[in-house]
Length: 68
Image 1 (cartoon, rainbow, N blue to C red):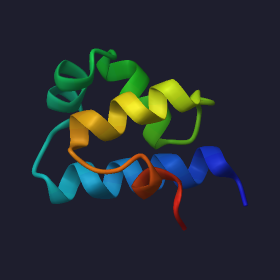
Image 2: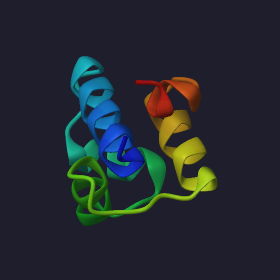
Image 3: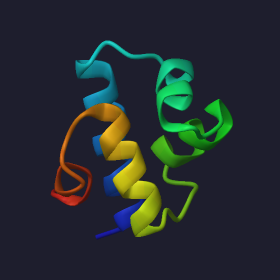
């Protein structure tokens, strides 16, 4: 399983469930909108710290981003 794709898919799904745009998630997380876009498309290789910070911005557990 490609973890980059998994994290990206989960991030996009949760973000949409929360009614957030990529720009809003970027603002909440401190990452750029381009980074969020690349992450959701599986083009980034996020560190555990990045996964944690994105999860905090989405108000979910970091496990929600890495669980199939």
